[in-house]
Length: 301
Image 1: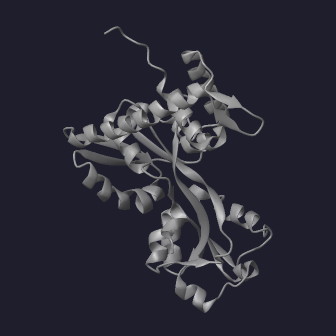
Image 2: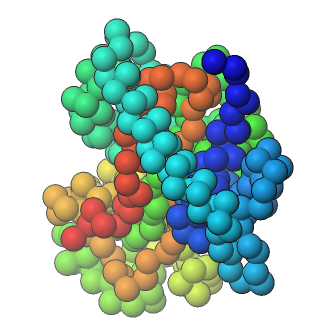
Image 3: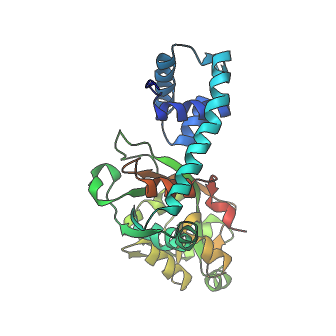
């Protein structure tokens, strides 16, 4: 059989996402790339095929007849690729998967999720490596998967995929709030603010979001890591800013309570990427973690 040149896979993924949502913007958010990147990838695919795939309007896009034909074939093909890769990874001989994350995310989100991953992929052994270094400065020989919040600091040749949206809450021990209730932002003046060196801007950003930048607390305490600050909050030492992804278990177990629940600050989602897209174990992890878009705030009742 003569060799036929395949279209670029990233361009196909961008096309399928844009066709499914009828939007380059929504497709970009799903794939964790910019609107311009999606537009360029689809233009590349159109040049490869020699036909237009979308009719571009001022505020909308619609598939051409060629686009509809391509979507009908490519959407299920991509799903089969993902399913087959996951099946191969499950049956593969034992392999190690090095996951580079920040320490607090590892302790409070990733590690509690790993038993499910190991159950689904018993032949893959995760190795958790914590680091605060931005992805673009990491040695790619030192990790298979990297997870970070937001899109800043990623190498231009990697395409991180959003998988976990998030919100920021104020949290404290229920006993502390029972003793010193917080019914308004002004009541925060009576409390100690708990800070972490790894997320130094959290309180400043929350106060700006709440239009209370000039508010001064009764005291402040600082910790090396956010995990320590959240543990201090659970022990009644003060109030901390906690991402929903990292405080959900404590809130559901009533170790922490949500202070001023009417004020919820949006945060950038978490993104995941493989150092080598051909790594079967890494592809299986990304497929597993991205099976459905996650919203950390939904974990909190």
